[in-house]
Image 1 (cartoon, rainbow, N blue to C red):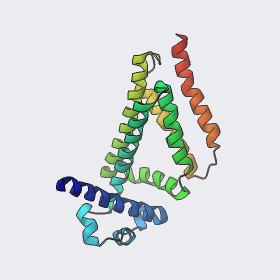
Image 2: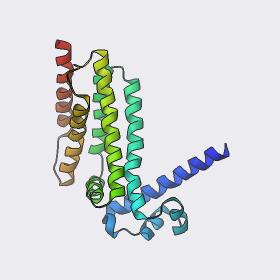
Image 3: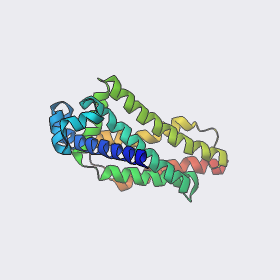
Image 4: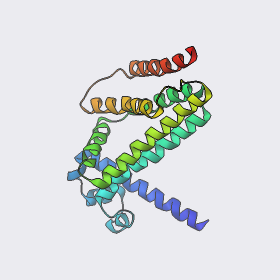
Length: 206
């Protein structure tokens, strides 16, 4: 029991540090934020923070990893418990992720884009971002392949390519929102569901 408690404690501490760092990064950006700022926000001493992360770059790299773990858990739960098959799972996931995006503070939306820019300058952060993206692509492709195996979706659809396209509907909107674009999220979701539904309708027609 003790080792498990230690692992849970360590993970909770890491989340505390990353949460504090995200708040600081949202306010001041990556380069203006110091480790002292993060320590103060987390309410931890520098020695305690450095016990979990060797520096600011490691904390930044932990951001996409945390997102990866959290989102994959959501995708797994929805895909395994959806009553509407693959189409139901995909539309339920669209509701979840786009609702999350619509309620995201403007500074957090911009932070996501800043993270991509930072990844282009730092190999470790790029690796973490790529792992995050690849995991999402593979998770959605798995749902699409299951739909093909069950006959819901035409086997002629390339699962990975469709997965990439669906994910970029989110990424592209996030980028537009980071520049101040206003989007009717309800209508946007309606169009996404219609587009996804067209693939399944074609499968049924065949």
